[in-house]
Length: 325
Image 1 (cartoon, rainbow, N blue to C red):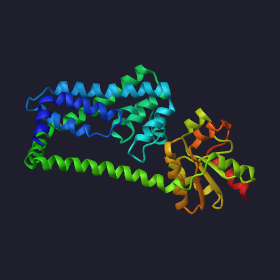
Image 2: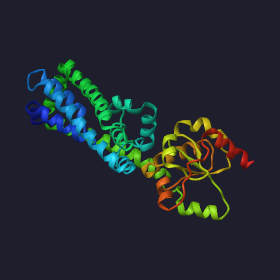
Image 3: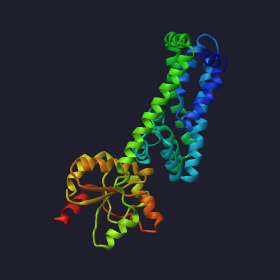
């Protein structure tokens, strides 16, 4: 453990730069604690606080511009890749798009403070064709704020940080082992939380082929699109689908007949958003609710048409309810 702190004291700026860069690229490393410790060590003159600040802000910008360019070049595929490697079960394209749609480019000011939002927001900025100059300007402000708070915490509470470091130092190798075990438990808990959600709906999914078979048999399930309105406008939706945003499930579900056969879809990898809505509807008493495997992407990949003029929201749900009577 002493060796680790010695390295931080000697190469704190470089270590903070690379840890922040790797974390902002999407790898779950504890970069912020490293920043706080490095800031505390700067008080003792081990390195310059200004250099530490400049290096870590630069690391954020480098990682963010990388995701911006990837999002601009590859669009939704990049967002899907980020979601697939994320350990946060609530992190998905739907959540980020909702926040980005609500706050616009200014969401980048607080993106790094919201778990799972920062990386997706930068990629979404690129896929939304946001101007690079605008992106860099606002993202630089957000990065400066994010790093500045961490730097302030380290400098202001440097005595407390030194006490914690001294405690770990007295523990020796046991201190390092305790830190590694705590990190492993955190990652394992997040992975299991995500795994449990996916396993919950894995067996209840319906494929596009099975959905077409229902249509051929004369059965017409209620198709529910849980994506943000902006995505429906950009990509269209499955013909006849109604819009039920994830944040309005409790309010709008009353317009869906309880006996209806429901197929929920989104664009999230592993149908995370659809799984959330399906679970909420089941808990509310709906008996047959299934996420569409592959979501809208699978529908389009099968060569099936999309509709950009379908009714949405409460009016469409009321229409479905009236038709079923």
